[in-house]
Image (cartoon, rainbow, N blue to C red; front, top):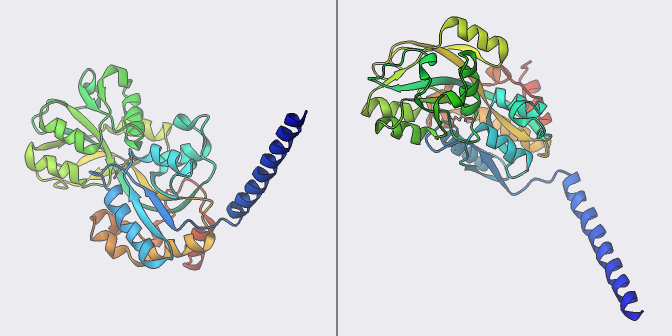
Length: 324
Ligand code: GLU
């Protein structure tokens, strides 16, 4: 009997402590306190997200009272999952993938991300289908049966590859598909171990430029009727032309693009996101020094292609700047 009483007292104590603890921690979350260290989810080390993410982390650390670091990841899809599970506070993401995450569609069916808000759209990311210079492939339809990298696990690239193949009546099962990050795709093409690679990133992409200097590179155009069909099915795509000599010796290429954007957790305080958004645009030169793609980062372009709601801090910045 004594033992039982003791056990009941102990239990009551534990419950009391737990209740106390949870009310304290929910109090902290309620005033959306700012962590002292923020993480920005980016992409693979051979992409554009990762180096630009390093630059943005520096800008945030220099201009706000928190320090930020860039984390390498598989890309857009993984970044949305990391934001949703609150492992990161900021993330690079393609506008199409952000939309799917926010609305619980496609790869986010049943795993909708509920704390996702936008900060700004940044630059065009081009769907580049990269071939070795001596390739005999002339259309996406000829990728059937070939060794093709469809992007890293958790990348936005993988979604784009799936959708582009779909309009040609192909699935990953019709290819010898491999899930490689840009750097590994390029070294496999270089070694003759891969026939093609999908790369969705700002062009020129360093990994592709590197391939053009070693093995030589070709880009595959997508036929106009297939582009129209793709945009009809998945409206985040826009037609995009890669100008001749973006990569040495490569002619003009017609393909599609999506937008890179910065997403934030809705848990972040308004003041902080306002300051970070302002600092991003005020210090854009630092980003241009890292990658030419950053030239298009500007308040007047930053709501174009935005596929999710803005964070109130970002909204305040754009309202002040007179941008609708
Ligand atoms: N857009 C790519 C993705 O989400 C990443 C591009 C990059 O790393 O620059 O998979």
